[in-house]
Image (cartoon, rainbow, N blue to C red; front, side, top):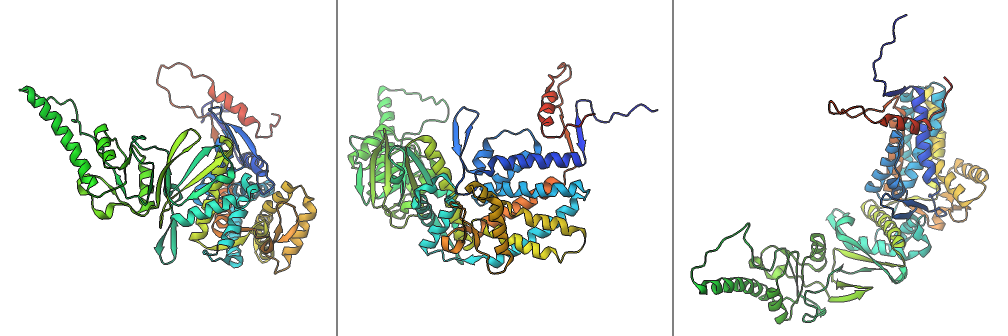
Length: 557
């Protein structure tokens, strides 16, 4: 009997084969179950305590998973899914996880039967191609300029969110904001930069109904000298600067030797004249409002207010860009280089208002603004945060539609149609791949099934009825009304999803499932290399093993 050969260190734990597959599948299912109840209009909210002790109340799949701290590697990659979904299309974060979890769940039976994971993956990829083809078939083009249709679309996206109860309010805000900030790139392509040109300002107080999209920009600043400068200007001429309006100091310690006493006065005079020159260069253009990103000295302030010009200083760069887009000004780096064309005349009104206990400067009523601010009011911080998240989702949906104006039915109808089409197709597939392919078809039903579960209707009856309807051609638009759980035609109920979101959901979910199925070995408990002589490490791997023990069936040795 030879002595056993040790390849891996003692502290390492290696698992391979089907054990790993089952662990991964269970971990992914656990993640999917966490957020399963947040799918659909009847969704529950989750309350999370984040590391700082703050509270997050949300039902946005991505926001929930972001806050979770998971031990299992497979579960971590599930979280990545919802993040990519959020960055890519902004909506459908919950569906991605539920779908991927379901895909893995149906694969478990095949792994028990010793199917090779690559066979399953191959079948899944085939199913993915076919499902995208089905999507193309049932997609319906939409007219982007038709506001009512856009409203319905965005509404169905937010219907599942907490703010669904405020009806059209958020949908209106989102559509207004995205159509304002959209830029035509030509050839009918529109690019909407939500991050850069749509600013969401949350001001606690008031009611949600007071929220609105400003035709312009709002900034959390007051004028520099509140008593002297005007706080309300009609049709202001705006100059945006990127340079300080104060005397330039030397780079490091500068020594100036003054021989005569009068030289001191000359020096001061030079400083004053320098600033006066700068101000004169600006005042040549008769602005009503000067905004700079840097400082503004008292002296400059004096010259400006004497000329009746309001000034705002130390503005964020991003805000400055937004104002430039809104009123048509150009941000200028040196006052010497100002031209008439750099002055922004597009704004209709500049005014400073007080909300709560802070002053806000509004530059509104712009003629053709290309940037805007969404002003959110609400009772509490938590509420505002949730509304902001929903608004982000809604704006992404509006943006997707502007980019790719195609619609699919919501309410699980798309998934059911895909599922029915795949089931029919599976009979023509040769060989062993047929079964996983069929299973993938069944997995798509997870979405409508979860919707039905969340409404609290009889799941089995509803699903059977739906499957029966979809097995006959021509019922592609039949799905579940997430509020009542009835089986209805999505066209009548105006429940839509955007094509980008659905296609991305399917792709992400299936590709992730294939990736997790391909993992057949996990080596855990790898220690960082420590400096020699650091002494024995604290028994860190020990803790991990106990955490991992929950995910696997512990077999008696």
